Image (cartoon, rainbow, N blue to C red):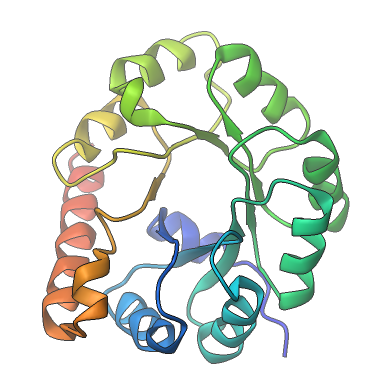
Length: 216
């Protein structure tokens, strides 16, 4: 059964957990804990071994509880593999016009990566659901605020270097969500199967994000 992307679910907790190179046999347990903590959206990068199979298995197992998508989609070939696996949304590190246009035509949420104001505006103009500002760690919250001053209708998803310590500053700057890798999903906890510690870690992000949003 196909499960479409849930915008309502994403909007309630717009943190995209980025999984790159995680052991396939631990993904389902990870995803269950992720959903139970109140997180909503997982991205499996296409440069992970067996990415398509992992996406397919996760969509089948938790697609009714999580948005499961594909990241590091750099070509139409990557896109076709991801969609065939059942990916519910697509994330790219760069602007590939053909990839964006195909996602828009298929009504698949697309989060293309961009860096400069011109790239951000171009991605949005092509139909991006949100624009992934990457790498955000080199730009900082002030960059988001400055870009949004003239481009206030664009929804930005800073990715790269986002953590519990700087999420609030990015939210105050106008970020509408985040792409977060190892800071949100620490690979050592997964590899050692420290599930209780991982659950507590996920809960920290949920609590902190809700606290920031409710204050503003």
